[in-house]
Length: 367
Image 1 (cartoon, rainbow, N blue to C red):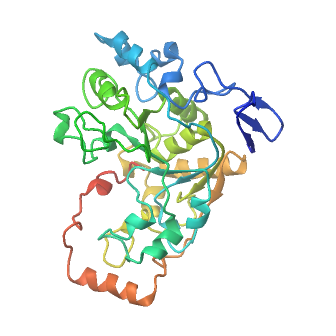
Image 2: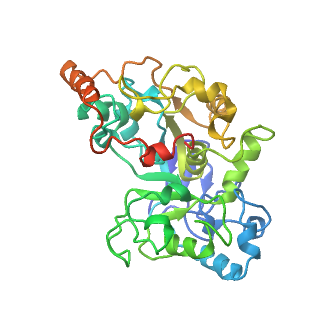
Image 3: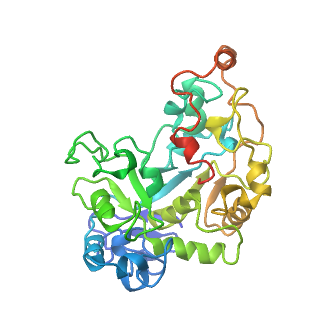
């Protein structure tokens, strides 16, 4: 929906294109509109939250010892300073972004939401696995803004500020043990698949990550993800949970007046690289066809063929505005001298930072 965002003196926090006034809910601007689940867990229906098992509920957490204290903590989590944007760009990591020159369009939105560790244009230019290092070209393809980053608690554990194997409390986004050095942008929206007595989503971890007053991390409402899964993936095999990309789209639907998607595959570019940062003459990249034709390719977590069909349906229904990008494997079309540097770098082998198995590779198949 398109319309006018809330301003001082207005009773509405958003007025849609039909003139309907959306008023702030009892918890503030982050509350859900008149229908649908809220974006953030603190505004969830906790009776329903305790009814469903992970990944679409917190039933184990509700029944464990100390669970009620954990629920009380979740209810008290603070909202971000801003939680409604008129237009949002949700940016995936598809190779379709290469040479598509969508960076300016991405950066033009009120909020830019990126997925897992897929970098912006400026940071992609520094990657050893990238097909070239021409920063202006990468910015032209990917943009350079990031307002939110959506990831799982598994992904959160790969961030450098988190101690190895989760054996100590986190340091937050900053360098200080008391989390006082946390930058407030980009904000992190995190999904939690296994809340309970063990693992990264147990109560003490949720409190450490989300309850600190300096935290810039926010827990996505599992009921929102369940709502999306039932609507679009009911009965789909090899689909245990939403991909992080679909999670980001569901999150954006509740946070944004209009959702534009970039860097998502719709099934029409099977030969294109799966990830733009792994696409090049020296990379052992995986094609999109591998995931579109083999539903079990992500160990049964996500059926990307069904996801492609869902995205086409959402675009047809006006739920999202798609920017599909390019199917041509032109590797970004940097100036010739930079393309030559990329090829020469590949012949000399991988140096520091070129190891396989980095944090983005560990997240392969989960986007």
